[in-house]
Structure formats: C-alpha cells, structure tokens
Length: 115
Image (cartoon, rainbow, N blue to C red):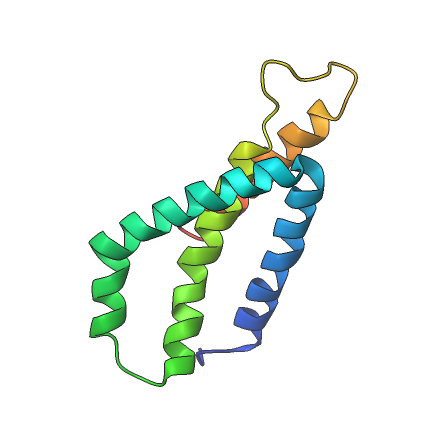
C-alpha cells in the first residue's frame, strides 16, 4: 500500500471534524483543559518514544509528518473524549447521554488506531 495514500487523507481529515464535535459538546474550558493534558502526554511521548522514532526515520519530511500526525491525533481525540464524560455535577436532564456516547466513540476510535 502506498504511503501516504487517500486513506491517510481521509483518516486525518476526519480528525478536525471529530475534535470539532467534541469541542462543541464539552465547551471552551474543557477544550483548554484537554489541550493542557494532551500537550503533557505528547511531551512525555516525545521524550520517551516519539522523538527517537522521528529522529531515526528516513524519507521525505512530508512522509514523516504524516506518520507523526497519527499518534498526535490519537492523543488529542482520546483526551477530549475522556473530558466529555459528565462530571458529578452533571444536569440529569442535560446532554449526559450524548457525552457518554462521545466518550465511548472517541475512545474506541482512538483505540482502534492503536493509540
């Protein structure tokens, strides 16, 4: 299978839509919290694994950027999906079922990619 391919474009093109949906569901404060957590996880990943993989990889910069976009998108999506779970003060008549569905869907989506 050629790399990068149309499958990569489709998958990586769905990431902004997924993140946008979770952003609309969770609100700005949770997005900022998620960005902080995702940045921390990515920093730890870079220091332990991703940095060595990127430095040891060969090929055009575009190919390496596409390969790096997969773990970055997985961490971002999984973090926002976890933050979409309603807290203990959730409104019982509110959007709790939608948040549970978003959390489950985002978590399964990230896990299916191996993240």
